Image (cartoon, rainbow, N blue to C red; front, top):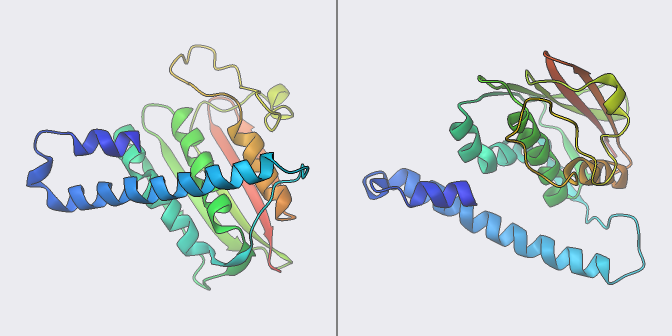
Length: 208
């Protein structure tokens, strides 16, 4: 929302009505999403339920991932990144919490950009595993993660030491949220990372 607002305050934005409309819609959609999430958070916090509360509905995964990419486009452009989305031509549909799952994709993309090198390159792959799961992977060419740190990634408030990278901010809650969402969908998530080469997150979502 902040990045989109920064774009809208540029002096020559009125000369580019298509960008004005596009980024205005980003702020509108994100505001509505934020309101919904706050209401859901308050309901969860006021109950005794410890497991993340989700609301499942039929979700078209190609569309869901593309919507996540559209939401994060201002940040992608600001970072000068290249993002490739390899969709599944069979248009897979799953029962999932659309808002939460889309936020998972956005979170992983933000991390890929945050821990990137000078020329971020991100590949999103959606495919049918030919078993009971669909696979969504997010792979980057960033700074990577030491093997000794991988087991802590999903812990609340944990942040990976970044050495000489000093522009990384956050509270260490994003990946903890990602894990909770995937767990709530009875899915799985794994990480493969090589320092200096990059990181890949792979999520498996049940088809039924």
